[in-house]
Length: 314
Image (cartoon, rainbow, N blue to C red; front, side):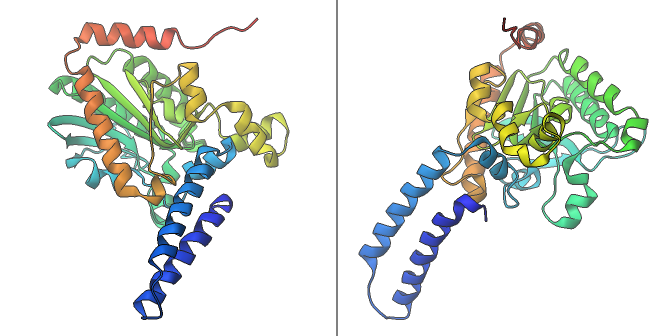
């Protein structure tokens, strides 16, 4: 439980106690329960409508927040995973394959963080190696062959920083993805579902439409890394989070993303099934928006979108 969620948890516990007393025939508390539920909903909305950037970082990293493997069964259907980069190995931190969503067939590519400690270690906490990014690009090229759109779901703190990753060409793999994705001739829809960190996120996020869940984050560097560079002290991470403008609303205002997908009250971790429904509806709407675009229009507008990003302030 996050520190700022404790008032909500206290009210929910009080509601549960009253319900238990009713089951034990120790009185009727319908009015009290209804009043507490109303106040709890109001308090939850008040807290989550006014999160600081650092609190949003905590929500984006919440241990119960839905990850890609949760969405595979709730948002998508008939997922058929494809493995390997045909050069080195199969990176488990970044997965992809054919999938269905609504009436559409898509190529799904996304960060695979895992749920348990063992899964997280096996998948390097969602930090992909170069073979992961090469696999992602291979699958996007395959989507071109079948003329089906690409959906990428991003949830990574960064690309793998390990020495072995650098030896195998981490920076080259990320740079190549950026260059090649601009030229892909099918629609690319990207959603930041949790953390969108640095080049590790951008390497699969060059989309025609980039959306963020309302309590996700997207930044050139994690707040702790920024604090370490600027202040030589990781305890300044909250100040770094404020300076980085890494939450959805500022990024929408800056034109870095195109849309914010609202999360259920209290965040996706409080209602994973509700989040899945919202995400599915949003993705189907995006796919419908781009289904009539020609390959030439996609490439031209995608290049213009990213070429225009950023401003000089004098």
